[in-house]
Image 1 (cartoon, rainbow, N blue to C red):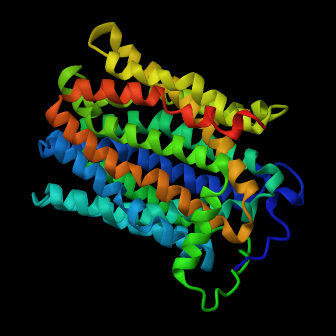
Image 2: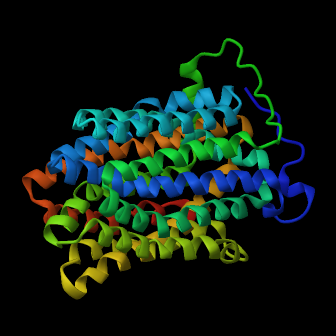
Length: 414
């Protein structure tokens, strides 16, 4: 099954990408959605930690509920995305996430909110996120020529990093001023606004070719086989999966560590996370210039290799002046991760045939995001058995070693 390549994406009609209405709408939708998600990344866990007194294991279960869909649905989602127009999938996923999140403040106002409901909301949001995350990078080449995918992905990462700079701080203060359930409303509204932006895109998406009587299993194998058959993609997948596993484990206990051991308020936590996100924004803004004249494969392995050891700043964080180590670590690792993401996503999009994009992206997400629920559970269990601080040390050491698959791959020998 193949899809017709778009005849006139935005970049081929002249001018910069931002001069084209459809590209601006895509960026605006992502920006408002990401801003809400960054608010929610602080607000939703704090609903459990502060409002429902969740233990490390319970926070781990909540993390797993939000990410387990990648392990279950990512592969078939790739087949569906290659069979269907991608914009309706994106809009539907945004609407599901917005409606699911709105149930949290409603239940809290009625004094009926429970950890079970939070887990169900996280699960519903995770299912929608799988579909959105598979369709989104598969939809971008519809609007942008392959020669300018790095620029397009850099704009998207700039938008994401800018919201990471402001969202957590805003979320922390919203929690402190209005309460965590009320702050979740901002996340819900952002997804509804994102759906509106996507509906405003006018570009005609090429209709996928009919799959005929092809079997689901065979199409799954094609996407997974393409990823596993490329040594560079195998290395990228291994590095990203290990990173996600360890970040999920660390993230499960990080808020508990900052609240109970470092003694920070929700507002202070939000500000520190926002300050750390500056590194990602700088990397996204510089990505297009950095990519000029640089071997694309080097842009994949070098930044993350240099910055990964700064993950050790989190367990080194302590009261007083050592609080500054937390945003320092976030800033430096974000810088490396953003450059890495822009480079490896553009590499994948340019390498893969158009009719296989959905299944390629789904296969990689199955492998790399399927590690998130396992990481959440492992982080919760380790936090219960070993303690929160030792768990952060183990995760930091592991994160420093995650670039090893890239260093052993053909990416080092182009």
